[in-house]
Structures are given as structure tokens and as C-alpha cells.
Length: 348
Image (tube, rainbow, N blue to C red; front, side):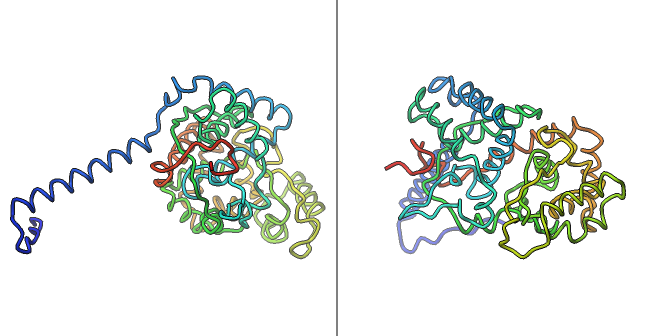
């Protein structure tokens, strides 16, 4: 069907046509400007800050050698950043009189660490290339290096992100998956970000190096962990250890902050052990075990089996999905964002 012709309302037809052409031209120019502003490239800093990748890698090497848990901390920061407004560095912003940040959201307040490490890397980058590299790019590069340094795969990181001048406490509470989420809830949160079920299962594999608080898995170890877990001496000993460090007490108890590895077999190595634990029913978080045990998880169950059997397939998909997640941009900051001098505060 042909599009309806616009009404002239008594205007001269030629003038009206000229006006429409000018409007279309303006829209095209704005669209082109927006695309250019948000375009990510591998060589974005090739001339303006050629040392940035080396500086970040060296700082991450020192951090992970000092404490392997720093790898998981930085990776989690990147994930929590990208799921709220896109990968724009908003998760790094502190609260101020005029801005409510994301750090104190229920999904972040007890789980996010590593901010001092990002500050340290930022200071080193600024000393080489002041005002050039965004905190959003820095965090994305550091997350890639974190994975490599604990045995995970390499992937190229397109750069050129701008830092947001805003944050969203509300979206931090609604967009991010929770430890007790059902499979359908987790899938919906990933699809909302433009990430597929395959991306979700692969990215969940990041928990092979993560830690979890007692309050995040208490309901699991006093619920269906025993029912889903394979019965052997190792799993029974593991369950006793978990219950010992996480007693069945009410919310807000002193034991809530006790932590344990989500992959107790190889906690400091990025591998596919996480998926082997799911096959045994030993996923620490309910949201993780749901990938294999949920009655709705026909596709996710097959992917868990695939990555458990084929570590190379997991590494390849994890790399592809990390690039895809890293390319979730904040349209506002892509056009009107900045390069923060301090990752905790908007430039004045």
C-alpha cells in the first residue's frame, strides 16, 4: 500500500516539499552523527592513547597476582554496568547531593567490589593520556584482561564508549538477575538487553571464578540442593561445609556476609567446571542450577551439557557473548557523554 500523501493545509506544494526534504536531511544528519558518536572501533585509541591496553593489562596483572579474586570482582563490575543503561561507567559513580548512584541498589550493595582497583588503573591511564580514555572503556578492557589472567579466553575489545553523566538506582534494582530468580525471569532480563538464551548460558559461566554471600544461597542449601545433587561423599561433604559456614538463621544475621566460591572445584581458574557442577546438581545459586534443572530449560539444559563436554565451545561462545554485551551502549552518553577524570564523579 502506498504511503498517504501529507496534507498541504493550504501551503504552497513546492515549499511544503522543500520543507519535508530539509526535515529528512536533518534526520539523516542527526542519525549519522549519533551512529558516529556511538561507533566502537578496535583502533579508537591508536593515535590518541596507544599505551592504554598495555597500562591496563599491567595493572590487572599486579592485581590478580596479589589476589585472584580481583578478576571476578572486575568482571562482575562490567556485567553490572552493562545491564543498567548500557556499558557507560554508571556503576562506578558515587552518590552525591545531585546524583543517586547504583552502588547502594539491593543487587549491588553487598556484591560489588573492586572500585579502588578501577581508581588505581584510571590514575595510571590518566598519567599517560589525560582526558582521553573513558571509564566505561577502561572497565571493559580490564574485564577482558581479568578473564585471561585466570586462564580464560582472549577477545578483541572494540572501544570508543563515553561515560554517562547519570546513573539509575531503579534500573539497577530491576534489570539485574537475582540469585533466587527463576529461569524464565533470568531469560527475560537477558532478552531485554538484546542477549540470547545462548548468551545467557555462556555468560553465566563467569561464575566459575565468582564468590557468593551466604544470604544469596541459604535458601538453596536448605532447600533443593540435597534433592538435586548427586549423592556421593564429595557432594555430601561440600553440603555440610556450606551449612557450617551458612547456618539457617534469619535475614540480616552475622553470617549473611560469609562468602564461598560458586565453583568450589577450581575457584581461581576460568574453566568449564561450573557446568560440571550444574550437571551434578551442585550449582550454588538457584538461578544457576535453574539452567539445568528447570522444567522450562530444554534449550539451556542442552547448552549446559555442551559446555561441560566441550570447553573450547564454551570459551568461543563466552568471548562472542562478552563482545555482544560490551556493545550494549547508552544512546544518551554515546552522543552527550564525557570522559571522566575521576570514575566516581561527573566532570565539573
